[in-house]
Image 1 (spheres, helix red, strand yellow):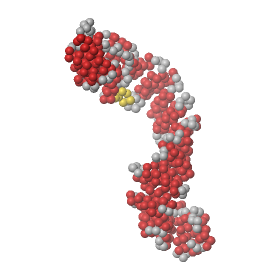
Image 2 (image 1 turned 180 degrees about the horizontal axis):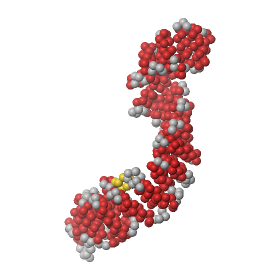
Image 3 (image 1 turned 120 degrees about the vertical axis):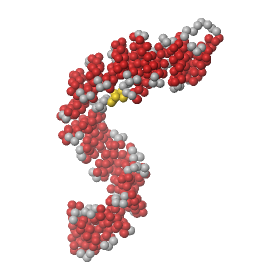
Image 4 (image 1 turned 60 degrees about the vertical axis):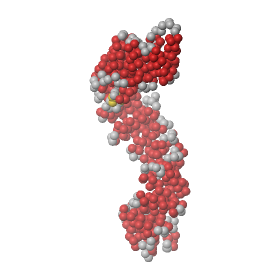
Length: 602
């Protein structure tokens, strides 16, 4: 049988909303739609049409009449069991014998509608309506079909006729107003909504509909009048006042909005939304002291969930911009919130993010670590924590945190990379290789080429630590193939080749390229000098070590020791001894240094 008209209109509302009537308010506080769920006044169960009563059945008991009634009943049963094709067959049999059977025409249209064949349904619905013009269900079905075909004028005519028949049909004004909107007749829609309200009283959703129409027409005063009606209907409810305040804010009437918010706060001072709205208004006015006051009121609310407080405060952080005083104020609020809600991970994350933004990396790392202990399921927290461990050179923490992160996210290549780096720093070469190879496998399809190069470079170091020089060289060469000027690889690869005294021409070539790119870097100058030393080019090695020593701020015990070794090879043993002793004082030289000093020999 014909679906409830209101249910059918819902689909029309959604269709119209998506194609024509989306209204966005400038400040982003509201995203208004022309059509939403149907008003409460329209939410009712309609009496179903009784098709058999549409055309009274005579008392005749002839075989033909009984057969027609049986076929009609079967058709209705098939419709009820969602078998419209079978229903059409039965109704066709009835209409073949009696084309003027309005009920059969109506149900045939219904069956076609169920199969999605709107065009085929219309002639049958029109015929049913013409046969029984007083039956409102026939008219409603025909109007629904016309709307689906965008024949709005014809649908309007049917609803207008229904409404003229008496106030008992006032509820259908909602559908008529919707069709007027479909047909770009907002003024007629407004008139119709007014008529419905006169007959049935104030309705919240109808009032909202009118507001949206007025807003699209830029009739702000009219929209505010409708908001006032809602406030008057529930004078003790602050929600309507806050809703009206949002409308006013969205239309740049902030002073008027403040008065509405104040009215709401007189009803209840414990209104989070009210204080947040005021904070935003004063933020736009540049009154950050008042913004802070309003937000502190929110954060002091014991009934507000800590996570929501954190989100509100995060929004405030976005408002502060580059204002140092406001940023410090936000940090103080975040610290207080974290202190009063120590077991809420969201507050710790928010505090950590804010500390990170202000360059306080150590404090941020501690807050992220606490958040990870409270809730280990947040990927971003682990990512930020591992990044800070690395930047702060906290190798033990990096190893421990990466292991815990991998317990929760075992398929994340970035976490395996962090774990491999930590193991490499701890000289746990096999563990480093295992982690870095897993990272490489998981990130093989990644577009992050820098990360891939970093993995291969560290694999070169780890393989070298295991003594697997073939794989070490292959890893370094893989990086240089795509990035021939990679300083990290140029340095380590050339140095390890010199230590092994293998492929020294390649080592010289790499180290020379390194110092050409970094002519004042003490570490890189020392690498090149050492490669030259192993190649027995002592004079040139001395030249580059003296350049390295010129950078007194970055001179290490190793560089001084190497200078002593070169001087020894050049026959300057006394000067060599002086350098070795200085290297001992500096610290960080080789384990052989003490023996050199004791024996006076290499």
